[in-house]
Image (cartoon, rainbow over all chains, first blue to last red; front, side, top):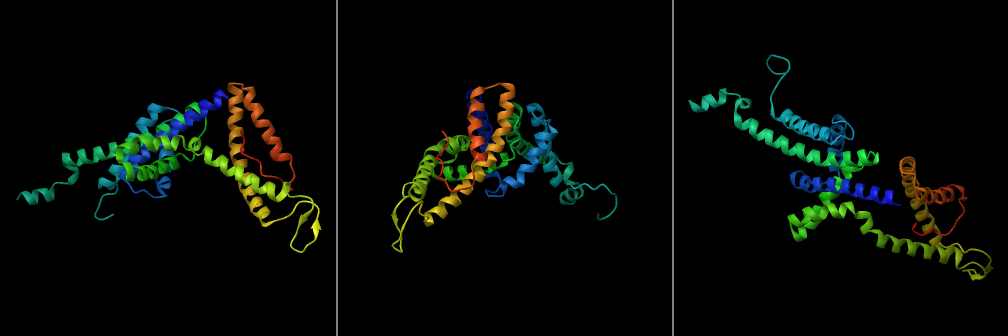
Length: 85
Length: 197
């Protein structure tokens, strides 16, 4: 019974963290039913890159993923030299 | 002259470009970290990969929208995570009321009114009287059963893990009768079971 309560509390804590991100993300992006689909795969990628279950790895991977996503849009780099693409 | 130079220098050589996009990327990454921290927490402590984690993100945004619309942003920043985290606990009382109502509907249709009863054609009939509330009850039961089955499949995984590690006899006792009840019974109409204690 105790373990179930601990499980519930930890799960609630995790859901609360996600909701805290949602409060910020809802103001930063669009609040829509599909916002879970837009960010969910990225979160899994971050959790996997950081090593499943490692908080420090998740931190580094999420910073890297955020920078990568931003600079992939901002930078105008081409891999192949020449005019146009 | 200056304008021509600005045109010639690529944007990516300016400090402002790197500062702006670096900070934007940092903000985006910290948002991602908040999400993946919850996912990592649940996975590392409980061993459950929560595929609905991003849906909690969406729920948080919606609750923040609803709460912040009424009492402002800062209260919503505190309240919305609590509402999402303890969503099930907050909804327990209305859900139990709903279950009790469903059960009483079914008992009226199946259990309480068996025996001699008045039908429209005047004939007395023996046995349970089929009403259209039976159909509603059956549909409700089907939905409840399918939801419960998926939940119990998930909790069975979880129970196995808990039993292996902590060895709680009470969790086993709680899971066992529910499992046998769910499998063994035939499909015949029966009263809606109430909320599991």
